[in-house]
Image 1 (cartoon, one colour):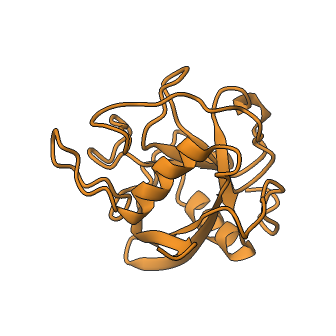
Image 2 (image 1 turned 60 degrees about the horizontal axis):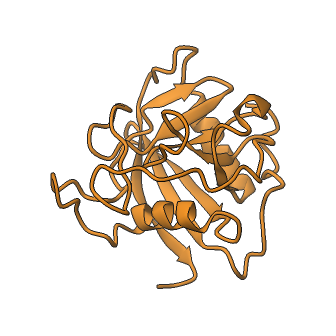
Length: 194
């Protein structure tokens, strides 16, 4: 992972945007907290979906009773020096992606204002145009080829958060299959307090 010392330059006004977190464990080792600024000033719907999945406040899906919560979910795909992917809260393997706006639904791409400028950028995974759900990824490097394809809606907001992403990158592989699967041990919202 290149430039793992400074958060990407996409942070907004901290007094307005939600701040959420992931506590990450790799195997039996707690590796730390990723503090994430969500750019709700630019992508309110995308950020609200992600924020609600961090807090778990929407309960379970009506259709299959899956908890709408990232807590306990896996970072199932980690491509060295590229990105880590998570958010399949049902199967844990990247085959499912729903959202908090309705059972097994996806939602539209809000915009492509923000760019994949470096490590720590948070984007939506998708299966093509307007197919966003619960899956997301953090970049480990600048990824211009993802601009206009994946909605950037936040970033790792601290130096310590980038160090956690660096630790995640270390268990990745060129194929994306991690040697040890990182888990989101806990997650929630830090700001504003709810």
